Image 1: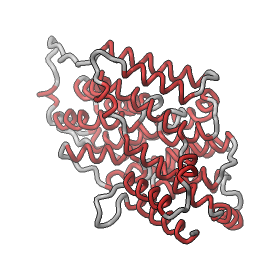
Image 2 (image 1 turned 90 degrees about the horizontal axis):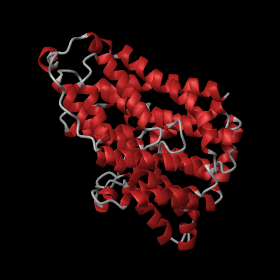
Image 3 (image 1 turned 180 degrees about the vertical axis):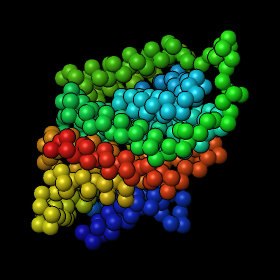
Image 4 (image 1 turned 120 degrees about the vertical axis):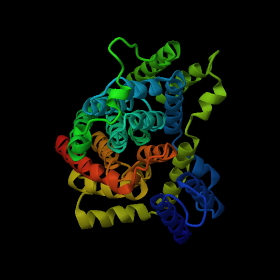
Amino acid sequence: MTVVVVVIFTVTYLGMALGRIPGLQVDRSGIAVVAAAAVLATGALSERQALNAINGHTLIVLFALMVVSAQFAAAGLYDACARWLVAFVYNPTVVLAGIVTVAGGLSTVLANDVVVFAMTPVLCSGLAGQGRDPRPFLIALATASNAGSAATPIGNPQNILIGQSGDLEFASFVQACAPPALAALAIVFVSIRFLWHTEFRTRSSHDSATRPSPGARPEPIALGRWQTGKGILAVLAVVAIFLTPVEAGLGALSVAAALLLSRRLASRDMLGAVDWPLLLLFSGLFVVVEAITATGLDASAFALLERRVGDPTALPVLGPLLLGLSNLVGNVPAVILLLGLFPELGSDELHALAVLSTLAGNFLLVGSLANLIVAERAAQCGFRLGFAAFARAGIPITLLSMTVATLWFL
């Protein structure tokens, strides 16, 4: 049975690395579901063991935050921010600063995947209308959303998982993780501005045509103020819940349920904006990692790693380990795997794990789901954000920001 589990585990994480199963139309979420079914079918885990392996608290909090993000998307907040950046600001350096600030700021309290999903097409069309190359701005959108999301325990899926698994306090998490996240945002801005300096020095070919006349009024941005206000109240309620003894999953779910009780926004549309495949990805990987843990091989792997490199949770080792895993299988699967390998991590190590795994996702295009979403949405708009173009900025951004973060935690 151990051999069967090892085969399932190996194939699963190879699939995570490739993003699919060659010859089949199965993505990462599908691979995780098939792997979980294989674990049950082979008897490696019983149904009860598999259900117990799934971290329901994490999934509930993640679902609730996706509903809150859907509230802002329905209100038009993401579209409004993107349109303002490209329609009212004609200095490309200021546009870059705005993208880093808005994407990073929104991603601290909202699911960063939803933020980039909504903003990418608007930025593409607006920047193309100004005759500019959208690629540096799209890279800024992806990397800033990742960096900003590292600041809080509700900024991205892996932070939610780490916060719930370690029962980490919201305030202490922010105190430990916000400084390196802010430093990473500054690094994103400076790196892209330097590496793509010709784009920022070149005058837009459409400046004279797109700049409004002095007396002209800009086109109003469609933003539902009432719906946006509801979203802001929901975010404040979620943060308040994390600051109180109220059980986080139940409290966040209650906030999401309140948002679904709307006279104008259909609950079907709100629930349709939830990233169900990501929730299934989490569930499947929980089961697969539990199966490998039940064999005892994870303890053997930990002992072997300890003999080779010393303490694997030490920052000089943990950083490179996360950089490699996050860009091989993705930062969410990497975190699930490491939490299974190292179940006794303290709060300091968990804070470092959250920040370093998130920042590592900026290294390559495949490092995080947010990067892939930006690339796919840009392709739908007719722009190609390739592997090499992303790596040109992503590699230095990641190495610099992870170095700063490591020094901070040390």
